[in-house]
Image (cartoon, rainbow, N blue to C red):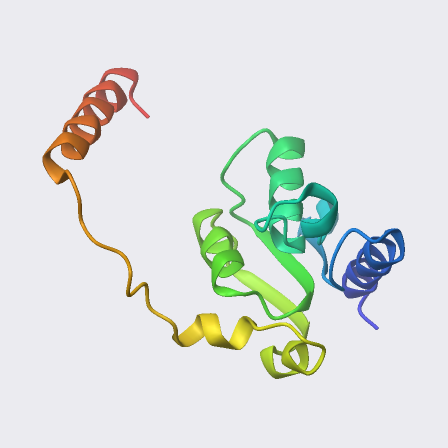
Length: 147
């Protein structure tokens, strides 16, 4: 077994044994060093966003003091859901290794599969001009601070 996947499995076991959430563990590696780790804490934190990948990304960002995880690889016990996949992309992580696939998660009662094909049918644009003003202010501040 790959050493980093083994750490992800250990994270998952730690989480399920503590009653934190589902069997999802994750580690993030940069230059052969573990820079972030996490497991599902949805139940513990009472927060639907506390998936293993999200917790590991938060940990890696904190440990590396950056939001940009370019050059990192992610090892996770299950194929990332769309939320986690989005976070992985926003963090600039280019390589993901996963153990179980979406069909595997379905067999133990998780509904990840439905989110891959589901659209936000209830979403609707509202007060765009006021929100665009905030975007414009942000852009001006960004240009001023040069970031």
